[in-house]
Amino acid sequence: MQAVIPVGVAYSQLLDDVRAVVRHELQHQPQACVTIADKPTDDELLSIREAATLLGVTVQTVHDWKRRGLLKYHKLGSRSYLKRIDVMNALKGYQRAVKPPGHGRHG
Image 1 (spheres, rainbow, N blue to C red):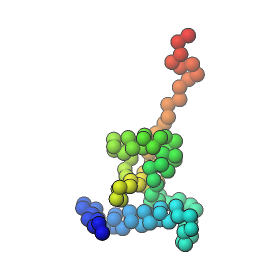
Image 2 (cartoon, rainbow, N blue to C red; image 1 turned 90 degrees about the horizontal axis):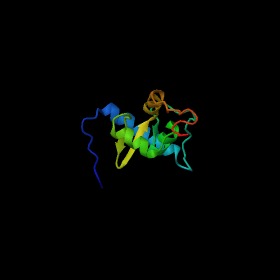
Image 3 (cartoon, rainbow, N blue to C red; image 1 turned 135 degrees about the horizontal axis):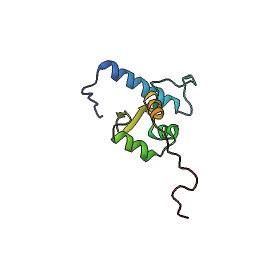
Image 4 (spheres, rainbow, N blue to C red; image 1 turned 180 degrees about the vertical axis):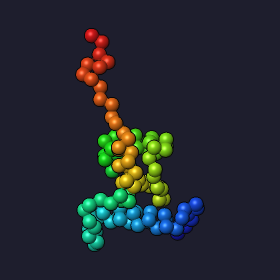
């Protein structure tokens, strides 16, 4: 059995993160025994793929933004999770550039 030793994490933060992971896992179980509200909460954890879909970008872009510190994430084992509120805040600051028609064409 592997041990997890949190270092530099306050107990309350660890507890919040564990609750969010459990909530995330329960929501993605096909036969969940617990009824979970349909309305997402700010502390809901999203997978990288879910965050990419929400942001309208590729999974690789989310990984890049994580590495650059643009998205705060939480590691549990080998998986990374992002809080919905952090993704939504990133979405507010993210504006996809829209090129005018014919931009870049030489004529």
